[in-house]
Length: 164
Image (cartoon, rainbow, N blue to C red; front, side, top):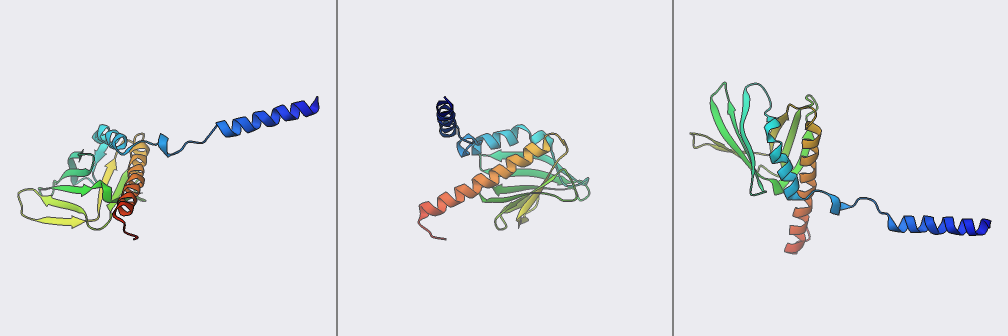
């Protein structure tokens, strides 16, 4: 009798171990789903401090991040544009619980000044999410985009045949 119970327990354990599995990458949100979530919650974005104001924030063609900002002290307006496939880091700003630094590899955020010929390049943009409830979800979404962008770059590298 004990042998049958042990055998039955062993069979149940083996079946449950082989038929259950942990969450894998197929259950993660896709690139498009993640961007849709960010776009849906863009109303929560502000910029770094009191003199800067985000006028508009959008992701175009599921690839290009565009942020239109204005400095109320200098009255200058500019549009920052960057290719999200180059996104390699999303960092919480240590001195403020509401800021997110987005960094692209190289100087790939272009800042085009409105009513000026000037175009500058930099490697990051700072976003501020004032809603403390939605902040962790938005930050996690950008972290997920960093992961997906890294996978995309690796796939492109392999497809090109380059070893490095």
